[in-house]
Length: 59
Image (cartoon, rainbow, N blue to C red; front, side, top):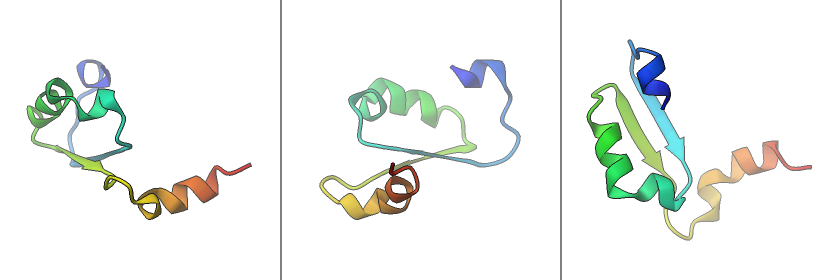
């Protein structure tokens, strides 16, 4: 993981989708060990949470 290769010296917002790998207890526990990282996750069933990013990458 990137955390083992690079030190975080200022607050970081880790924004992600609701993928199973990011929602797992193990992953969330690992993220919480670093006090400078805040995890942000889209709300279940709300397509508008990620609308700006989706429209930016739309082909």
